[in-house]
Length: 273
Ligand SMILES: NC(=O)c1ccc[n+]([C@@H]2O[C@H](COP(=O)([O-])OP(=O)(O)OC[C@H]3O[C@@H](n4cnc5c(N)ncnc54)[C@H](OP(=O)(O)O)[C@@H]3O)[C@@H](O)[C@H]2O)c1
Image (cartoon, rainbow, N blue to C red):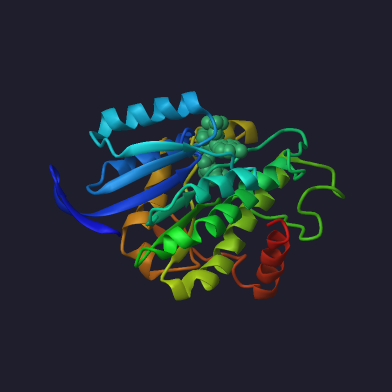
């Protein structure tokens, strides 16, 4: 929360939210639902300019909120994320890490990192690190990590599938386990700055990603956006930190107990920074 502004929607607190992967099914719905709330300036962090323009225009039209913009950045690329953070000096109240991919074959980024790990894990990690100064400028900033209940199989010694045969589904499950573990690590790290960090499962939503993974999904993007938006806006997303949520409810996370493994993963990811 940065300023108090009085506008056509009345007096309200002004908040700035960044949403990654906001040209995708769930990300667009998260951005649109946030933009529909009074006082929210929403920035869609996207890699494709034409799609981003289209999404911004659609959200402005549907919500009547002109404070919706986009920024271009590649979530699989640390230098791109650094450049975005370097040109961003304003406070950030809410960061929603949501962008993800599920490539069928093992590929590496221009920075030489396996693509799914780079995007789904390091993208969240680098964004949270790079935007910590801007999050710290707010009194109660929040980071919401869109993870999944379909998670597991993490091999700390083979995060990039250099030893194991690459399997898209396993690489995805590993990345979502890592999202949930790193949520705990960042919650600990950022608590003293008043920043809460929580993870959630959005539901089973029909999207490019879910179709790539072969399960389709029976829920709408708007249903999928409910829990992330709730964590970004409800009191619970501020009073809780390091927690995992499904369907607007806290859920036990089997990956949050092993503090040693969480620290090992955090240190392994730090070596990519
Ligand atoms: N769908 C489900 O049922 C489900 C279930 C559990 C968890 N989730 C989680 O929900 C989140 C959103 O998934 P979704 O189903 O909405 O998938 P989606 O429709 O495929 O959207 C993925 C988004 O990520 C963006 N993205 C991918 N790589 C990027 C990169 N290198 N740089 C910048 N943006 C990039 C895509 O951009 P482009 O538009 O340019 O491709 C797209 O906007 C993911 O974290 C996923 O793990 C989804």
